[in-house]
Length: 599
Image (cartoon, rainbow, N blue to C red):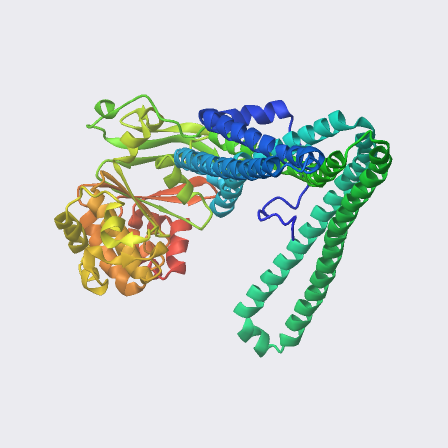
């Protein structure tokens, strides 16, 4: 499939057209630092094209002068010159390919590094709008297109332009009449090429889409083989695959017929052009107005003319795609974070703070319904505060705002009377420890996961953190102990082991404010008891905010806030809320909390 496009994401939809002025503005910061290397590659390409165009001129001189003169020395000299020009041209082209390949790799390296570094500074709202998997695939394909623009596509366009200009120019100077006849054939072929290429791209896009559907069906049905067998639906699954396979075959055959037919037509036009040259040049050769060598020259140049014209129209589409990719990358780089750094540093932090306050906080995700509606609550220093309520009520949103993953739409969050948005992010987050339900573990050693790649933390402290939560047995269960390898996401560990590492990481960090977001909801009862015991030690002398579904874990909280539909509907201690007989008491009865059952 000559016109297959490896980047399927968003490419099967109509390509948006951008003004060249706008596209260049986005491309300039990317290409600017490498302008010298690009100029060198373009210069080498120009020298190579000049050498390529010299070949037919040397042949003409040999045919018209050297051979008729019967001068063996001159024939040998011209043959040597032809070989030297050929070798020099190939060497220049080889060097140009190396320069452009290195140029493309340098650009994509710098570009990916810049994009990744910038994305690390963006707020969570950016990643809510762009799912990470699709975002990385999109960035990867866009960066690859920009690389190809500088290492392949731009050079292909320059080559086509230089080769066409030089070829037509030399042909016109040699014999304008024959050149006119050739152009009468070339121009209609060029105009006919554009719609054919568009049709072929559309056909191959349909082939790719059908192939993707087949791959998706196969993956889905293989995973569900037991279900298909139990419900006797294997025949239906096979029928759907057969139907899509027939459609794929029809599309592939149709696309192949057009593709090979097009290239066959193009070859026929090249042969026709040679026939036109021979016919138009015959009379001139007989009359002595044109030499045999000139006819050979026209034939050689015509063979070099058709392919650049076809490739020029095709690479223009690739340039538009690459420029659009550069624009998308530039739009990411120009995206500003929604949680910018404040102006207060470490020396400005109120070490004698007494409480954290949510003051009439409102928040919504994009244009969705309000997630928080005027939430006001107080987290006293060295107290244990719990957030409870049904899923979707806004508990995790409160945590996210406190961590500064998002900014309040209205109201403010203060510590010691100072809005937390005024502090630099590193100053604020250095005091926070976070344990989530979904554990984030990295491919690497146990030590790297405990310290989050901070090599300055001694092994003694890492072991102490595990011992604090009574999880030192992990050192024996993971081959290699602290140096033991953990797979991406901790897939070689149980859920309980992953969560224990998560807690040990928080202990090792020694945060002043500890935040637990449903940290024990995904572990077994035995592991939960171990973690609960560790939590009691971990909470001592610290400020803790706990989001919990299992209400047995928050009975000893100093303050419990019941969050419902984005609002605080109840607040008090465990016993106070039970006595009220409201929402919290109802939740306790549903979970068969002993005090609630006996109340």
